[in-house]
Length: 397
Image (cartoon, rainbow, N blue to C red; front, side, top):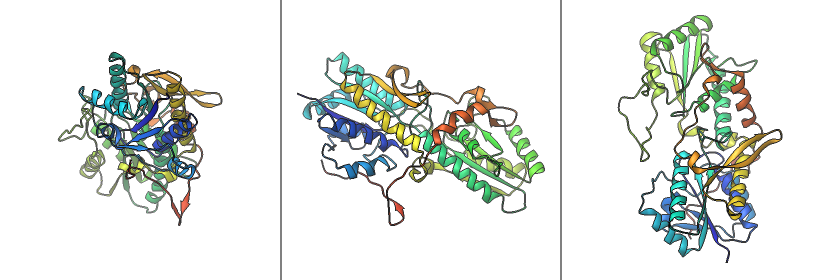
C-alpha cells in the first residue's frame, strides 16, 4: 500500500512559498498518492485540521504557484515532546508516511526533532525540510527561496523612493528600515538599486557590523554637506559593540526565544533630528517585503518549485531527515540535500568579506551573488487589472 503525503507551512510567508507547495503537489500527483496540506502548520496536524488536495485542478494549482503568503496558513508553534505522539496518531489515521515541512531554521529544528522521534520509536515516517525564508539565513544552501523576490522588491522600491527623495532642492534624510534580525542580506539587497541614474542608497547598515551612533551622525552629516541629501538603508537588527540590539528599550521574544524586531528606523530618525536636521522621512517596509508577488523574481519562483519537487522525489526514494538545499552550477541552480542537524537552529550571516566598511557599502562579490537571484519577471494571472491570488485555508476537509 502506498503511503500518503502531507506538507505544512511554517513561520513568516514569502512571495514564493506557495510555489514550493505547487512543486510538492504537482510532483506527488504523478505518483498517484493522496496529498494533504495542514491548515496553519503543525498546529493544524495536532488539531486534525487537514485539507485533501489530491484532486486539485490544474487551474487552481497554477494560481497557487503565483500567489503570495502561506495559502494553507502558517504558525510559530514550538512542538513539545508530548506533541510527537499526537502527530503520529493523526498520521496513522490518514495513512501518512511522508512529511514535508516548509520553513526556516526553527522549522528545520522541528522537522529534525520529529524525524528523530520517528526513528527512535520505529515509526515508518520520512521527514524532509523545504527551505523558505526572506532573511536568506539558512546554512548549507546557496540561497533560500523567498530571498530573491524580497531582494527585488527592496531594490525596486529603494530605486523609486530615491527618485522621490530627489525632487526638492533641500537638505533631507531618508531612512528605510528592512527586515533582518541577525543577517544583513535584505538590507544589502538595496545596493542593487544603484545604476547610472540612481546613486542611492548612500549608506547601508548591517547587523554583522557593530553600530556606532557617533559614526552614523558623522556619516549622515558629511553626506548632507556633499550631496544635500542622505539616503540610508538599515537592517532592523543592527547591534552595538556589546552585541545588543542598538535601539531596544524593552526586549520581547517569541516562543522560539527570538527577539521581536521593529523600530530601528525611528531610533535613527531621533539621532538625526537631535544632531543634524528635522527633515527626516522614515519608511518601514514591514510585511510588504514578504509578499510582494507582483515584483517576484522568476528565478526565485522557479527554484521554489524545484525544491518542492525535489523534496517529493527524495522522500519517495527513501531519503529522510534532510533539507533540500540549493546548489549553484554553471547552468543555474540544482537541488541537493543537507542533514537537518546541520541546518536546525544555525544562522548564516552576510559574509563580512562582502562588506565595504569604509563606505558603509557592499563589495562587487556581494552584488554578483545577489544579482542572479532577482532575474526575470513572473507572468502571474491577472483579473480586472489586479493580480489573481488564491487561499485554501477555509476549505473543508
